[in-house]
Length: 538
Image 1 (tube, rainbow, N blue to C red):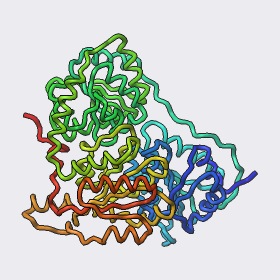
Image 2: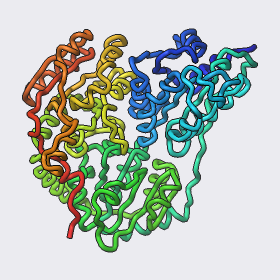
Image 3: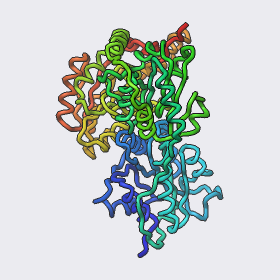
Image 4: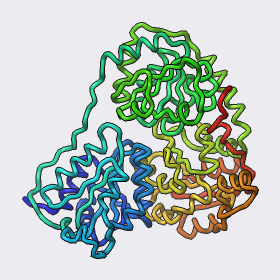
């Protein structure tokens, strides 16, 4: 039996449990689109209004589910439009796959000015991904798709890309039998585990810091925390690994206070951004243990003890190595620190009151997608999260406009869960055209747009640091409610936390796309930076 390159690629997607592809069809990849159309019973295709939307939706799908998020765009401008989302997937350690075309194979590299030609598209993709390659003929399709899945899902998960020349998609070749791509496994070093257990047993005030690398290690992290009576903190990607209503969970404000007397920092799947980049202060005599699948992390931030391995496997081994070690219950002490942190955070208004309202309205198993906005920044410490992956972030890229499109992908991956997207007016306009996608495909995300008619953070910095000289930070906006309704979406405007809570409850119950606008007086929001970048302790 022979098949086209495109058909072999779609077979690879199905064998690797891909059930959704986001994208926009285009001339260079018509054969791939047709191959997907012929397998529509196996793979859902969601077409978007912008290539960036396709890629962000794939990111949201992957980040919230742990499964591969796949999108397809045309070469050249399509790839470049998707570039911001690929960067986000790289920073957020998400398994995202970009499938794209290229110009005719015999013209690549000649600079003839072909439709959608880039000087070296494959080099561009390699600069944005963990792995990228080109399929030059049908005989390579299964092997290179398999390699892409292996690279994407093994070790530190990150985006990959596969490009195919225009004329190669439709070429036929032998159809190989395909199997799910294998993943690499990093063996643990037993001696390192034993040494870590000794360090932990000797510690009086250990702190566990978790990041996105520990999303699949929630049970193991909690077991370790309970055994050694250590609090668990996170910044963004690790939110919910230990539920915020568990005695051992501390947000970044509480853990900063606890850190004063910390003698052992245990990083699990985390870059340790708080302790090493934001807090700019560490207690005297602090020791550090790091568990991370990426060995380069141990070079970047040299710990006292480095354990390279899977977070769940290594953390479980560490708990077992502690044997009969037991620590006194410290729940009351932890709660006192958490209560103090909550009182301190109340100064950040009106954000905290609105976030409380959102938390009351959102079911416990719902998803919250932040944005680069005053509400999003505050949510990093002010919005309780109860399970891994329920808090979706853009990680260190902090790219404005990622939120709404990402939330659509979250909802596609989790159709039975509520999804709320929190936006500023500036960021929402980056992807507002995807309201059409939400309505057309019935993607029931509730978008909350806090409208202060400004790029709020930029405006504040210009007011405070540049003598009030404003440039490009004040915005003229549409009527968001009218705009959403013009797409066929339910929409309303509210102006209090109580009204927002009721509007959210109604929108979630309707299980349909919705938008809620919340007017905010320009400049009225309290900056949250005193908690996100606290002053070093003396």
